[in-house]
Image (spheres, rainbow, N blue to C red):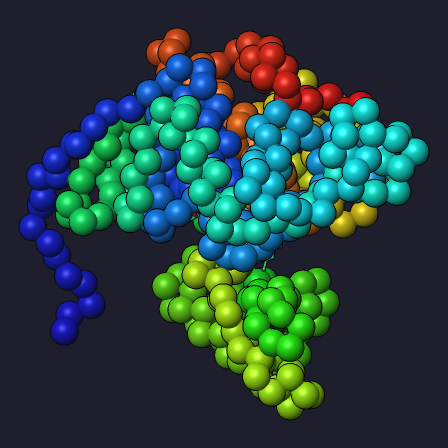
Length: 394
Ligand SMILES: Cc1cc2nc3c(=O)[nH]c(=O)nc-3n(C[C@H](O)[C@H](O)[C@H](O)COP(=O)(O)OP(=O)(O)OC[C@H]3O[C@@H](n4cnc5c(N)ncnc54)[C@H](O)[C@@H]3O)c2cc1C
C-alpha cells in the first residue's frame, strides 16, 4: 500500500452555528461553557466521551486539589469553587470544616488546605445538570478532528460522530481538549511533552471494601528499569500507555492477592487515559514557576501551588489566547506555560480558573464581534470580578 491515502473532497454539512464552541468536556471545558452560556452566548460543548469531567471523572483522579495558598488564604474562587462544591452535591467528601464553613477558623485554615476528595459518578451527573441548567448544547460521542479557517480566523470545527463527519460554525473556539488538539489543528504553535510516566489509578474491591489505589511510576523522579515515558500526542503512544497502565494495575492486584487479600479485584479502572502533560499552546507568553507573586496587568485568575504552601501565581490572559488565529483560547491542561509551571497549572482547580476566563472572554468578544486579541482585558477583568473571580493576590 502507498504511504498516503487520498480521499475525494467532501462537502461536510454544517449542523449548527454557535457564538462559542468549547471542545472538550473536562473540568476546564465545563467551566468555559458555563461562563460563556451564563454571559448569554449561544454555547456548545463537544466531547468525544459520553460524560463530563475528563480526567477528574473518567480518569478517576478524584481529588479536587486546593483553592488556597496553604497559608490560610483562598486564592481561587468563581466557577472553580462552585465546581468543588458541585463535586460534593450528591456524595460526601473530606472538605475540612474550617473551609466548608464560610466563617471557618482562620487559624485552622493555615494548617488545612481547601481541597476535597470526591466520587466520580455523582460529579459527572452534577456537572451535566449544571450545563443543562445554563442552556449549553452538549454534543457527546463527537470527536473534534479539524478546523475550517479563513486566513487567521476559524470559521468552524469539524467533528465525527454517529451522523458522520459534520461541521459546527463558531464565532469563538475554546480549546479544552487537554491535549491542545484544536490549537494544533488550527496552526497555533504547540509544544509536546514526552515525559509522562505510566499511571493506573483504580478502585479495588477486597477485604477492606472499596479502595482507591494509586499506582504510578514516580512523577518527578527516575522511572523503574524497563519502563518508559509517553508523549500522548500520537495514537500508538496513547495505546501503549493505556495497555501498560492496565498491566500495572494487574501487577498491583496480584501483589495484593499474594500478600493475603486473595479475593481482591479491580472494580473500576480509568476509561480515559491518565497522562498529565501532553501537548500545550505556546502562545504570546509562557508563564514560569519562577514568577510566583508577580503582578501581571492582564491577570485573569490566580492559583496556588498544590505541591507546597506559599507560592501564588497570577495567570495572564496572554497564556490563553492564540497568536495565529483571532478567535481561539486555550484552557486547562493546555495553556501556554513552561514545563515547570505546567505541573502547577494542569490540576483540577486551576484548569477551572483558566476555563472560566477563556469562556467568559470568548463570550464577550463574540458579543462585540471582535477578535480575542482585540478584547479589552480591563473589561474582561471587570466581568470576572463581577463573577466572583479572584484576579489579584490576597
Ligand atoms: C494520573 C493523574 C493524576 C492526577 N491527579 C490529580 C489530582 O489528584 N488532583 C487534581 O486536581 N489533578 C490531578 N491531575 C490533573 C487533572 O486531573 C487534570 O489535569 C485536569 O482534570 C485537567 O482538566 P482539563 O479539563 O484541562 O483536561 P481533561 O480532564 O483531560 O479533559 C479534556 C476533555 O476533552 C475531551 N477531548 C479530548 N480530545 C478531544 C477531541 N479531539 N474531541 C472531543 N473531545 C476531546 C476529553 O475526552 C476530556 O473530556 C492528575 C492527572 C493525572 C493524569
